Amino acid sequence: MYEILYLVTFYHTLPFFANVSMLLLNSYLSSSVSFNLDTIYLNWNSSFPAITVCEIYNAERIWDLSDSHFGVEHDMHVDDFISEIVFYRGVCSSCEDCARMPCPSNFTHLLDVFRTKCHQLLVNCSYLNKLFDCCDQFLPLPTEYGLCFSFNSHQARKVSHVQYTNNRMTGPGHLSFHAATDIQLYVHAPIDVPYQFSEGMIRETVLLGHYKELILNVIEVHNDESVQDLSMEHRRCRYGHEHVPERQGIYDFYSYSGCVVECTVLLQLENCNCTSHFMAIPGQNYLPVCDYRGLICLTRIRDKIMTERKSCNCMSSCEEPEYNIIYNSADEDDEASDEVSEIRVSLVELPTQRYVRRVTKTILDFLISLGGLVGLFFNTSALRIVETIVICLRYRKTVVKWVKRFFLGTVQYLQILDQSTFFSQGSSMLMHVTSSYWR
Figure 1 (cartoon, helix red, strand yellow):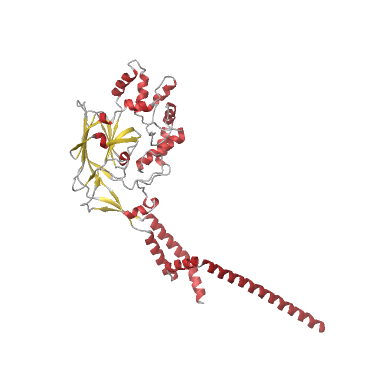
Figure 2: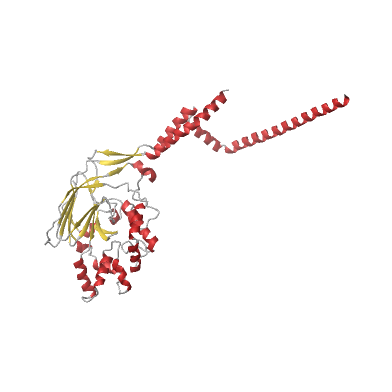
């Protein structure tokens, strides 16, 4: 009687138990990580942002270098072609003219001649009022804008830690330097890289002879050690060493911006079988470089690629700080007379708050909750169930032997029972026939 009552209760309880278990599982998967604001800032080491400098197009400089390289009497259409190659932005309208006139085919040589070298571009660099050789710290960084020079960058230094940090001993960092040509200035996280149509990245155009000062504050993201044990789907971010399968070998560490750039390169390869000369890095990757015909193809599909790359499967980085501008010096309208531009980037103060990513629910918490449900509904424990499974696995040969014996014994018993039933039925029929005969 009790067994029947238990089976009926089990039958009606099992669906409810399954629903509650699924709710627990969904809660674990959807809210296993939390963000909290931390304000215990006395012993923090905060990273100074990466500062990337990219040279921008200067028509007069291109004309002067072109005259000295090709001669004064050269075709003026060549200047347009060189400008679009050396400062390539995804479009090469003048490449169409190369079908009817000779165009330079060695793009690497053009970049070497017409792009400004680091020692010519950056001078008088100092950090915390200490002078340093600009080209020792502003290192080459391949971007969609060409070869730029980046300070305090993971990707440029090819190391996983930043060199310049700020704490109570150093005070808030400040960097100053001079630029000898028109530049685009990017301020971003050390793990990131500048890329086209970047949203949220600080970008300033500084023309030759002008002054630019930026004062920033920073809110960093600190990850608890247990966060790395979670899967990427649970924490919804990637660490620098967790590359995507479609990696093209352009950057050494994963970042959202680097992922978008490499995804764009993959789209270019799929559509035109080549990529721009900015992305092919000798000795680091072996990507096919587009000639002028390939650049014509990239120009025709540019809008398509810009649309498709929004759907790239790129997670945010787990280590992306947030930078906000506190002060930005006004752009000067008058024509500058100085031979260099002066740039200064500094932090307004040491950070007093940061976001902390913590694990709120581990797999152990989920198992404890599930075990409590098992004990509540079935008057047993998950430990007993596990013990039963372990015992069955450990003594599986004996268990299988017992099952075989039970099965074979049951079959033999049923056979004997059938035979006895057959004989009893036959005897009854024989007695019935005999009695009928004598009557």
